[in-house]
Image (cartoon, rainbow, N blue to C red; front, side, top):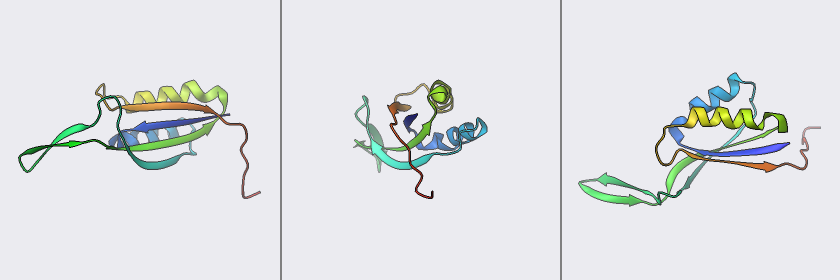
Length: 104
């Protein structure tokens, strides 16, 4: 099994979530996070002054899936999250050694 973590733009969350659900990937964990990538923040205008924002709001989506679904899920996330602008996000893939259900 693999764990996929995707750091994405908040405004793309609904589109990504709907795409995953439509393709049978229902179980996700979502966390609101702040961070920065290579662009090192963004400049915003506030009351006529330029203000640097070093940590940009993002959403982290986590899924644990079968090894055979990794490339499909990466493709779905990339397609739904893509704007072509800096800050589209990153996807990380990790090995999952074991999963235990608490309910059982």
